[in-house]
Image 1 (tube, helix red, strand yellow):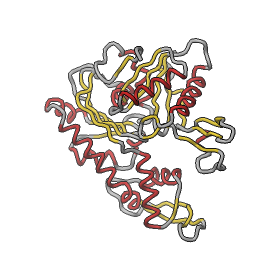
Image 2 (cartoon, one colour):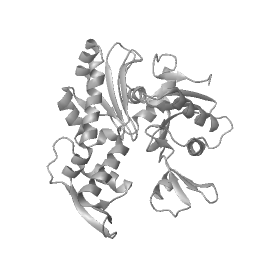
Image 3 (tube, helix red, strand yellow):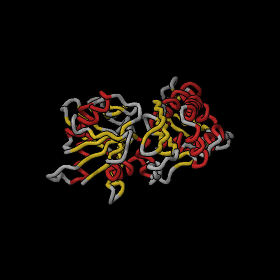
Image 4 (tube, rainbow, N blue to C red):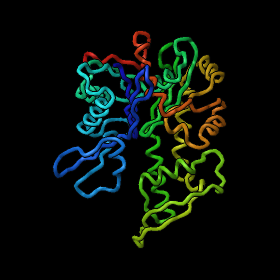
Length: 333
């Protein structure tokens, strides 16, 4: 079995070329510090977030697209791989997705975690390349294709032509930072403390970064900072826009920077082909319209953008001998 793994800050997706997505679970591990045992991994651990006693901690092994806790990450990957392979004797070849800006030390940590999980051969592929392959874009021709992959920890922007990456940029600005910004904004404006899950739901429900009107509202619940009592508050799309406006501008700047570093002929191709948006952040309300307006190039979310990178990782085995950049055989590690 050859599998592709999108090792995301928020979610881990595993795909098999012949079967599609076979696992999609949160990147979370519940750890009992008293007994030093792992209680749950994935969805079960994620449900415990903010609801555990002092001795149990819900750990996110990845932060900003890189491994922050190697031991917990190794346990998480091992569990997920075993769920997919059924603990078979011959372990699979694995393609792991990594952000464009990852360092050698960080990439080695990813490889070591996969090796400890039992992989017999490991490849690394950069997320923008995997996203294009996952959408079955022909990247072998001298034709510019641009992709914006907005995940939970990083946003990767890249231009690909002739099986290689021409220009790229990775910024540590993505979904998780937006959630944190919403938490801070609600605390400053309404003096209410909310959790990560509440902030994420508000972002998904209300976000409109193109033309917020204040007419779309939703109710949130949290703890008042002064009284300490539970309260509810109605917020609008204008509140969410005010909270994440700076981060959206950072994303727009990153896209413009990559375009400025791209050869003119390829920019002409991109203007014709449009820009592909992948990752959960591609579904942020109004983002595609905003990028289209600010760049003058049609930007549109991919079909099922949250799974395109994972699917591309599994398909990448077919292109292993053709890809010139962004794909690494790490057998020698």
